[in-house]
Image: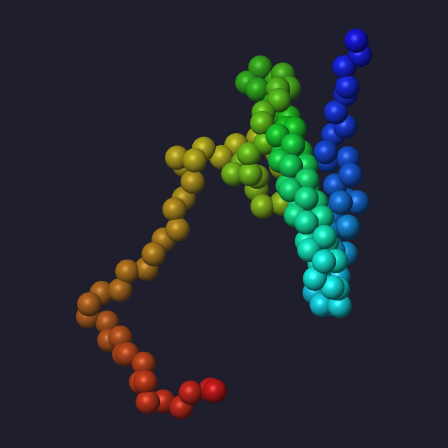
Amino acid sequence: MKEKQEKPTYGNFEKDLEKLEQIVQNLEKGELTLEEALKQFEEGIRLARQCEKALSEAERKIEILLKNEEGEIEAKPFDLADTDNGEGTSSNKLVNSEKVAQPRIKKTSSKENVSEPDINEDLPF
């Protein structure tokens, strides 16, 4: 017996997203009857869930190829924390979470004169 192959959900992501955007526009116009609006809303929820599922599947499949210590290429699961903010990736730039610099907070001494805002000043509105 031949097994049914599931079509990847992410294959129609763009089409589903376009349909979802159209439904949102239709609902925002407010020109639909209650029955039509409910049908559109139900379809929108279905499409939103389908798009979310497609994104989750795609995220699981994304891999970053890195060279290990022996110079061989190995697959490593994609982790957003390992990206370098869209500036391009490099196999030599591995960030160890323990070595990441923490943001510095400027501490003010109690001797500094800090004035409180005057609540009686003119307000801009």
